[in-house]
Length: 321
Image (cartoon, rainbow, N blue to C red; front, side, top):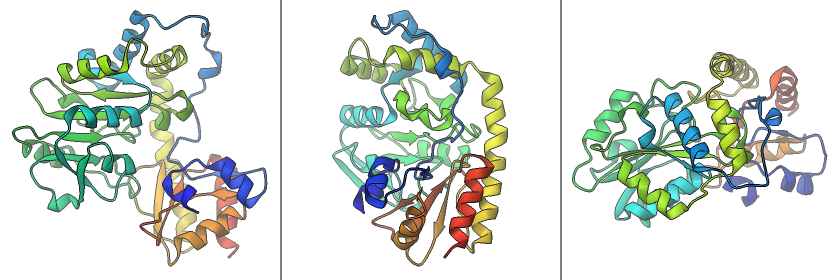
């Protein structure tokens, strides 16, 4: 079962292992209502992206994040951005656990820590956090940033920050601050296959990232889709209203089944049960894929179902014990 405790999204492996075709994938924290404009864009697959097109994407993203474009660098997925920055900064670091697996791998000498026990060196954490959905206030994050001294950095993963941008520190990024933020495109916009992310940070660090990535860091499709989606303010505002309401409905289903949902990110909820793997398997045999955790056997993360039909299907499976 380790294939499903490593990362969400293993739907093909689930089909092979459990059988069935009509799977409901709740193993990720990806918006089940993707941005609808991707299929309408004309993309010229015969040529490489132009430099000005990449600049237009980064400008659109910067406007969306609320900072100067010189502090925004597009990367082929947040995972790549995390590893690149970790390699460039090096040194010792701590990462807040529980959290993303990549946080413990991005810097060679990174060690896990509880948030309250974190020392004053380089610190890696997510806000909102995965998988527990904990959200820290900007004031708390500023406090953590102010404690970084010397060569220490605050490396802040905001992959799930788009639904509610209020806690984000994106607007605080600048050349004089030892703050780096990672933003994901695919989660909120529901298009993980685009493989697009952004590193927000001091311009000299971003120059080093661009040098490492080379001339064409992201595809023509990623540039076209990302730029158009970030400019679609009507869809963005609609999602920011709709997703929390859907999360409330998911909470009601989980509570009806006897669970206490945790987390402040509307794209997923965490529940604690006697045996997380047993519940994972019970749901999988009803063709519903969720996310168990090898190191937290009492946890199960459940992504937001796609609409009323998906929610009803989950409710029926939870009730059929």
